[in-house]
Length: 321
Image 1: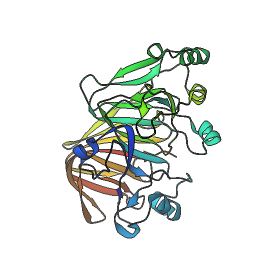
Image 2 (image 1 turned 180 degrees about the vertical axis):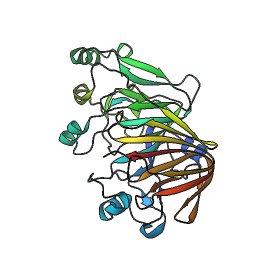
Image 3 (image 1 turned 135 degrees about the horizontal axis):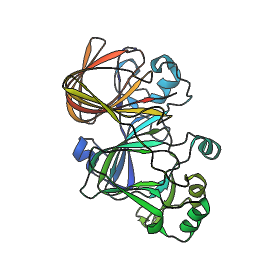
């Protein structure tokens, strides 16, 4: 198997979503408030169909299960990563995700550590990120007393920022932000606060998960220290946004392609790629493929090296096992 796997995105309507995924990426999205593009996914809530090659028409998780050689014979029983684009037309709930141990016991899936590359942020945009409680008892008391303004920390963000969100981090994307999210393949979210808003479809407020949130939130909060490094390669620039030991689950890179750039797998046996701006070509095993904004693909372990050409911004990731 010496072809990249191009993937058909899956879209999810969200109470906080909008229409930017169509406007900015030219996706053919369903009607409604579409908040999430599941771009590279083996998760049962939104697995991708492969669009080309010998596995055309098959689901990514099926190919992962039946053809482990394509993925370098991985240890993980499930496809371990999930790449999304999120359009926060309104603010997401303030939430927290469990680690592997808690998620496996209570939800029977992976935990959820994630990170965001900020594709767009309106002027003055900010995240809810972290909290002020010094002990779990204080966290519980502030939640039970609805002292939200006192509890939540804010973090200003701008286009081009990178934010790491380990499991246990209290957080929310707020309105006017579009991100590419790299995360463990999990769909477990515990909501702490949802602005008392009502879901128009059900006429009810969405469920909160206060006990689970108190259980899994890291106390006290300490913002992770990032060690972002960049390297000029010809006219292009390769930035390592996060890798081991800072992240135990994935490495994430930004490739600012300007002309020709040769790439190979760095810390994993296969590489996920998302073109978030520009256009160009990809050449692998003597065959050339067009790339444009909004295209997502997986470079299998059976291809050692490939060439990019054009003017593109690509976010790439690898699973760390």
